[in-house]
Image (cartoon, rainbow, N blue to C red):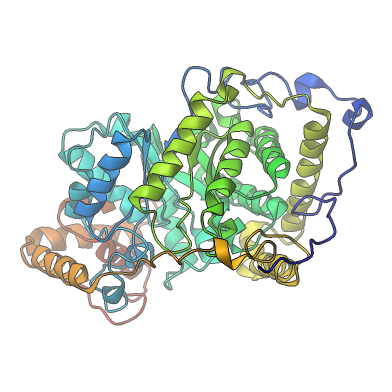
Length: 542
């Protein structure tokens, strides 16, 4: 047995807020209850977005799914729904995440790796077969706007009303580039697709969250809690500002924005982070944009428990980590909760792992009594003081961004990425040195309880070939005239600053276009090569 000497206890939060031994009335200052806390469902929404929170309807429980084919993913989604999941959480594969078709030379070796391959409307059809899309809330863990276009196009073709569809896509080009999801598309191109989709959905799919700013992935890249929310909120405000500059009313688009946050290990810090983020959002929507609607000022925050906190050694400990993170998410007032499977260091969650995650949701919802009271920790001397400190630190990050000309300039200069990288390396150094304890990694590293390593999930060669042949057949049987019409119209729409590429994208997908083809047509409209990697030609004249 190998057991390291325990490190000196750190009386700080994970992100660096100093903690006292106890808290009391003096730590609240001269608090104005209505201005800083108020009741749940009331401005500034510190204590939650809804008055009743989970009393009548629980949070949206989800677990990621994305297997080697759309058909296999459909089976997994039905399994999850039959075992208590309340929404869909789909992760596409590596090629799709990069905006490429999975038969692209870059993507072909990686078909089905890390998620489901989604190249066209028929892939989406196979994945959604037999699902009532009016009843489900569908979350797509991807930055690729064409995936949302595929989902909306498929739904209408199967008799569903776009205006009733609920769900979300991350559609967040700045966070995508900050974390490496960038196959070479200029930011102006991906921003055009993102803002066009916001405008189009506000009119045609008003229940769809057209933008979910992915602060989770910033946290996973190394950001601390302050940076995660400081940069993430500034990114969201930048997108809103761009949409307003295009003529949209802030109160028409802001209610359909959301954040998906990472839930890390520091229990109270993470609760305070969610509460502070809602308070900042409520204030800034009024101050910056003159929002009047309560729906605009009440931020929706969904949560994914942090995969980076899971360990390959002693993986069963990850069940405990995810449970505590889920509890913090609920006490922080999340709307949706994606719970990590304990085997995620190795693979997309197995059926066993997914079932344990769903039962964690169920125990938390049905056995603990926590959902009976909205914001049960509200008024805690410690938590309210920590929420105030968290707001102060987040705003300090936002001030740093403003001093550098705003989030776009801070991103373009490389400053934001440098800050995240520096913080991440510092945190890893603390773990490597043992200054920060991680059970099973630098504490209680007892080989007798490690057990066998779980099998690593890799793309399967035989399944890859079947999928690649299917896509080749699909592309061969398309109506080339209709495809040409759709892609040329999309290219021309991209050239017109007043045009909306998202609507034209849906039209092109209906005519047979694929993920890589619609992205390529928009690239050509911006004077770029069709393929960001310069190895694939357009199937039609562009």
